[in-house]
Picture (cartoon, rainbow, N blue to C red):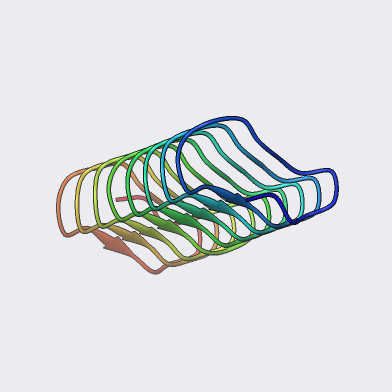
Length: 129
């Protein structure tokens, strides 16, 4: 389904590009609802932040402005410029935060990073775990 102006869906099944200038490039049940957002495949992924991207995987969400999830399962990048690069059940909740992989990890503080592993949390500004 294409409902956003200048939006495009180029493949897959039951995909939606509802944000202005948004795109979905494949997979199934994906949605690009943020302005200039994109989903590049996988299933049940959502890019709802402006200029956000989900680049595959399953049940991932990029809701922050310029946020990205680059694969994995059930990952969330929810603040401005936050990133999750894979793994599963990871959250990048601080502005500019990143989780590089693993599982059940959370980068909560601004500019904080979790490099990987399991059950790691950093809530300090610029914290690294």
